[in-house]
Length: 445
Image (cartoon, rainbow, N blue to C red; front, side, top):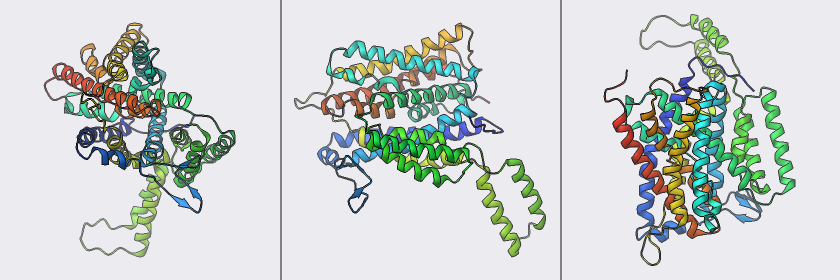
């Protein structure tokens, strides 16, 4: 595995956290707006809009098609744009395993065990509530924790929150994402086309070879990644998995070492005057030196960190809000005028609110009491309860898996989405209330 050295390991974490928090707050507004529109007189137009076809066509070839069927706008968002989201998640997972909270066994054990509990218990609860019914295929829906939404709620407390709690929440949510990705890859693939699958393995070989040969050009990986996405789309494996696989091939080492870069700057700045006098005219040599330093600075940042940083804004402020606006517009009333509630609604809601809390808290208690892992400073069993409740905020990946589970049954899909939304709201409110009374009242230094 590649080694990535960063002076302060929390810098990338804090930068990513800022985007997740702002994105989470935006999501709350988008979800509310989608619900209002879907249940307003514009509801039919809102639903019809997502069924419009999307084309990027040259002759008879349409990039956005599957087995000859053109993608709808909803398909484009869920199968194409969400691939960029999963690509971003893959980059984050790779960084965390190299230099973050999952980079050592000791650091990773607590959030990994907590995340396992947060996936296993909700699945058991959902199975017990839906066994033998048509809703049983949605087992994986209450597994996931939404990083952006949960950190958005946590941000409401400002710096009353110990950094250890933010790191723990982010780390087990990342492990949750890994679990969700594996579930999508293993259980939500249709009949496989061997030819396209073999072609995709060929592209993967080129990506891995590029990493091994220290090719740092980002477009090399992005263009081959686009080809791999199309091949996955045609092969029967869910296309979003291509995003994760491509992310793991992105080089994590920079083209220039930081020491070499700093020495180069020290050598070049000698040609510049030390005066602050305004209006100084630079020579052609000085301009060329500045351009050279600018070019070199891009090569000090690894492709992995550069892409992760570049994608945060696109993912958190465009793709996820668009996904939320398209998928969170659940029509609350059925034909008889009552709220559309069914078995999936209750199973998902209980799985998120009760299952996630019990699973995360109990598995954390087991691993800590066993002596194999310990809680970091600022964490205690009381404020941990609030974090475990926030773990029940399962918005993005839960809605995504709900779409995959009940694609052929609009009624069950609507009921499952209602369970995701209600479970997310309840878990978020309960988590906020617990943390409000358990976090210190004074500002932490």
